[in-house]
Length: 349
Image 1 (cartoon, one colour):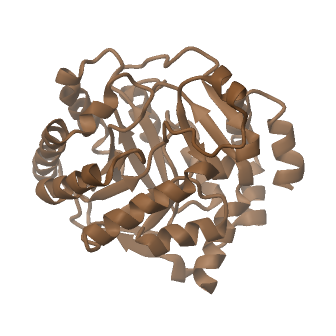
Image 2: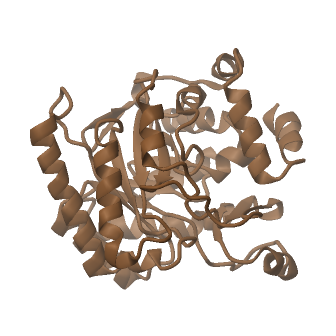
Image 3: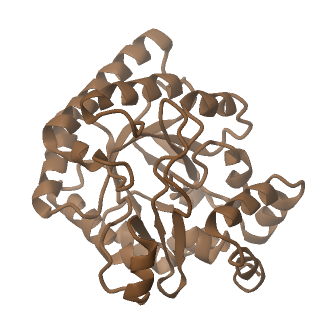
């Protein structure tokens, strides 16, 4: 029904308008119950414990879909094992000028240059305080404001971390979006270690002074990386994870590459800059997961994201060494039925 009725209707509108329509539909009485009835698939065999958290299944929703935490309770009904809100910044910001989100339907892909548009971390906290569904894990993806210089970026990450600490189950540090000028420079070894070491220090302080979970597990901290890193840079990432003792990596964010696309060159030129997500990213993101897993000898968990449009795509990520997976563009193109298909495939092998 999604591919033949709902998706064609949604694709009549601009991507951002379609997103608002979906958010409105999810809040309508009975819609989540219908999604649950049609698509949900549960099994205790899908449960998985990663960095000390128990996930009902390994399929999550990536950051960006519900960046302001406006409908995480509703979308949990789609049977996600975890949902990542954000990327959120200390202060609200409008993001880049529209249009800033584009479909590449021939490639089953998106290009976005949203620019961390969000209502600010305090608005997100107020929504998280009203959380109803505690059966699904909630992650908080944090970033810096556009007008904050890289020299002062640490303060932005500290602020978001402190504000969200009591309201999310894990953190993801986003230094890999291509749509905030200069942000990816924070992936360099020294500035990245400075941010991660400070957040780990804050975690220790908050855990001691404000209490941990009842199971004694502090909030895991993960790093989200770009797919465009070289093997030498990935080696640095492995070293940084080991040195800072963060809990894992999210691989990967969107790519700036435009290689091997079916969409025409003139069409791509008219769209302009932005991060590419979706099916064209599948191969590279899996390569990054495999490289990290093998070179680190599986010493830290990896959440795989990028180009998952089928159960087979998901299994490829898990076989490459991922502990969990995340959907975004695949969820838009394939619909909520994709989660159940992946879960069934995991069970059946």
